[in-house]
Length: 471
Ligand code: ADQ
Image 1 (cartoon, rainbow, N blue to C red):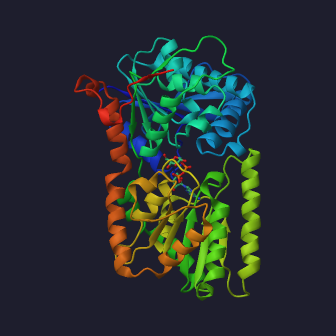
Image 2: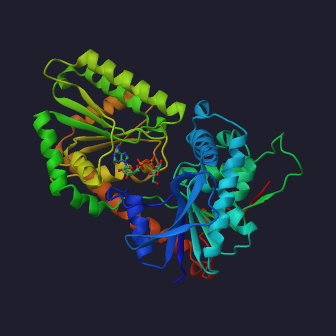
Image 3: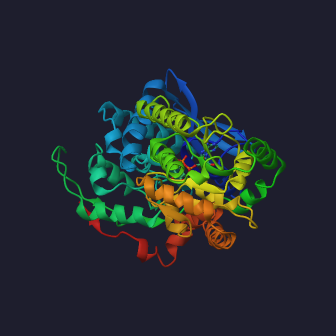
């Protein structure tokens, strides 16, 4: 079997609370030869030309240092102030500064140069996420002929949003240098094809326009998932029980509505709190009987738009408290810190409603983890945004439009009043889907398609293959 090289912006650490993705990819790497490659997390005066390899719990990890300036332009700048908002259709929150693109390409070149000496000809390379779209181009410039795959964890943008991104034609050309581009959902493949069909030249591009040829690139859907059986086990572990007991002491018989997110504007947190406010306003019978717990640790807080989302959320939570709280009842708790997976599993299991309402999301693993943690004898209800990739595989959730807070409030009411039979019926269907789309199946099916052996077979599947040249 060929070696597997995983490349991502951040490399996994020794953190035992690492997410499901890191665990799954570690497992995949443990089953074959290879290494993980990415940024060390360190900022230095000079960029490192060579990677330093380290053994982390049996996993070989190659790490690179970046300069502060490059990192700002590449990470906070081009990746998270242009690509992230545009891919999530928040053009209003995108900031465009020309030098960021140069830093983005410089870092990708640095990655490629440092990686190349460690490659063997039949290594299979799996590149993760929007920070590293140009990596295949840079590796190919240096002569790499390996099979290289890319996986996009966030949604693929609509055509208009893509046009709003500086250098979008170059980014699309970069994608065409991969053998396989994996996307989260059917809607993303549809958006990709739509762009390819309608590609128009930018009036500002200099030089002759080259066609972008996707004839060698397979575009396919690989929905990511969690490890549902591990989460089910975790939800009855001592650490989970400790969290459950702690919450039960604080809540008496109140029903818990739970949100768990990184604090990010794509997660629809203000809209969620507004929907909860409407639930309490329209249904006085629930007051004192329900409690919303929102767990949202800050992320990317050097970026202004993230600070503003945090401020908005603070204000909205304060508003709902002021409107409904009583001396002996608080309608909500808002916790700005992360919890380890066992504590999260306990919270998921206790919650009568899992409220997962991003405005747009690649997949959303919280939805998977919530389903997996339920007690089969008394499962809770998943209220899920139509605009999460997860909606395609969880049609048995209560699907809502997160922009329509009346609809979400009504879904909350239905969830809180839903009888045991319907909850169980829906949960069984959701759990079957969570198992079918487990993270192991995701990694295995992606790598099976990327592996050179697959290529020698009957070729890629036609139903998801984009074959036309565009330009
Ligand atoms: P994220 O935007 O980070 O990921 P998500 O999939 O919801 O979103 O969460 C990833 C992981 O972070 C989950 O395992 C979850 O348990 C953990 N997490 C989230 N909030 C937490 C909290 N408050 N405390 C502790 N842990 C927390 C991106 C894309 C998603 C896509 C994933 C994986 O934006 O759409 O599902 O990658 O591809």
